[in-house]
Amino acid sequence: MKNETLVIGMITKAHGIRGEVKVMPLTDDLKRFKKLKTVLIDGKEVVVEGVKLQSTKAILKLEGFNKIEDTVVLRDKYISVNREEAVQLEEGEYYVADLIGCMVFDENGLQLGQIYDVISTGSNDVYWVKDDKKKDVLIPVLKEIVLSVDIASEKIIIKPIKEWMDE
Image 1 (cartoon, rainbow, N blue to C red):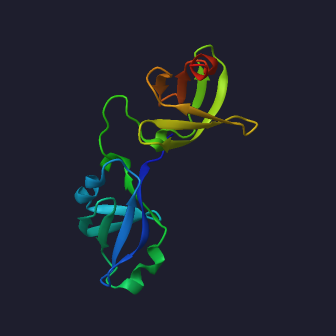
Image 2 (tube, rainbow, N blue to C red):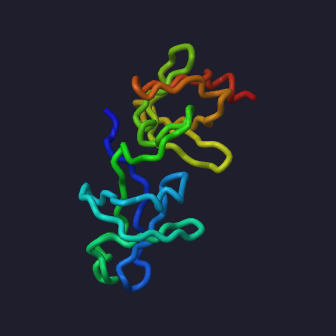
Image 3 (cartoon, rainbow, N blue to C red):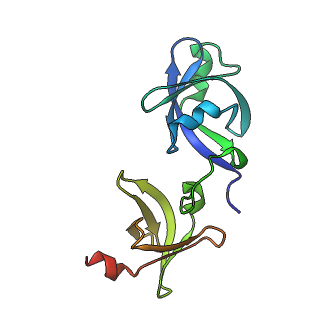
């Protein structure tokens, strides 16, 4: 069963003296912060009183945090939302949280390992896969390589590595 919450950002530091915090987004859509009414921090629901967007960060005013001293406990904390409040994805898009732990096989049935992380490179994502022996394989997420993704069965099928590594 996948997580019922999804991480959307990390609080990096205080912003100003009135209890606002600067958030590094861990989502593709910075504007999604404008729609937040509540967030989860350490599993506790916190009301979002205000949001401002900078070019690459969000500034949040959270209920109960009214001065800079209040926000010290929030530094380096992750902000999550309940899955039902998550941004709806297009077909072929997946939450990183749903991909992590999926088993990767080539189309011949060879098991390559589990997705450990997804690296965003700008041009395309890369699946970081680790096998039982902790050997790493980096798989570019391209239509020519990733043939199918089945989140429900936690199974991803790719072209055999030799076919795309030699290109």
